[in-house]
Length: 405
Image (tube, rainbow, N blue to C red; front, side, top):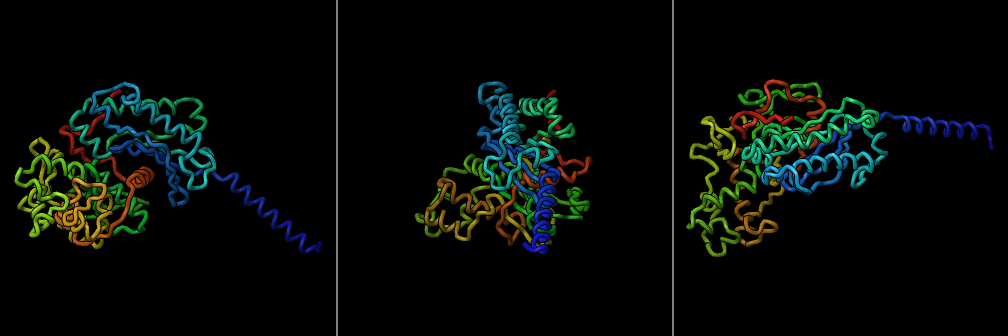
């Protein structure tokens, strides 16, 4: 073996030992745990902030909607009660810490080696806003039951040794402004740009959000040290599930088939406008009906006129159910009678989605996807919203709920 080869080999071995030592001694990245408390269940996601790139790990899903104990007036009953849900959320967090993600699609070195946990968030969206509106006191007790087991866990000596004493815990229902903002922030992270708007269709609500310095109802949002004003609004009741309920409740008997699957087969002269005229989601003056948020008269229901600046947004992205729209949806559902997984309401939704987008003032858009949970942790990291003014809880007559002690 020549001296040059030996020296080269030693340098190679030394370099590998040095790199391996750096990896072994690398500090864990900041992580944020967030529970998406949706209408079909509650899913845990863990986000690792890896030098500006977000790595997402999926935890277990609790197949019980957070709103269920509220709607059933049930604080404690095996598997269904509010307190039981709180302990299930705590167990889901412990499972992530002890066993790691459910599917290890990204390298996993163990929780302590991967994460410096900064916060645990349990956030609910529009379905819970409807539950809170109907049963505010039950909802207040629910949030207390959800948050207490996590706080008790974090206060134990074992957890303080593992995680430190600075882990923040937040548990509440998101405002409509936040839901739109978080979807916009998640897409901003993917697109690496700011100058765009987002429209999103969920099951209980529909959101619109875009930067707007001159909009009266816009709020300052700070991301990466830069502050700009963003307009964001959520129409409670405009989501696909709730909108169809409103349509079914309000339609007249002689309009029974105007939005039926395959209606064009029995009515060759049928047009999409025949379906549109059977639901009153907009006014003659061009305002959009917000069925469940409180209006100025102190009762649910208001008419919203969007800022004229909508027309100046250079690019729009459509997410949620909007992101799955196809050019021939109306032809297939209303014409051919092919409804897919929405057999009963396929024609209605095909017409309603396009009608709603048109009323928002959006002419062209790119179908896309966006997960608001990423936007929530970005906002958490950057403290993106000021303490005042805070987004309003429009679905409640007297402001946002405070959890019971």
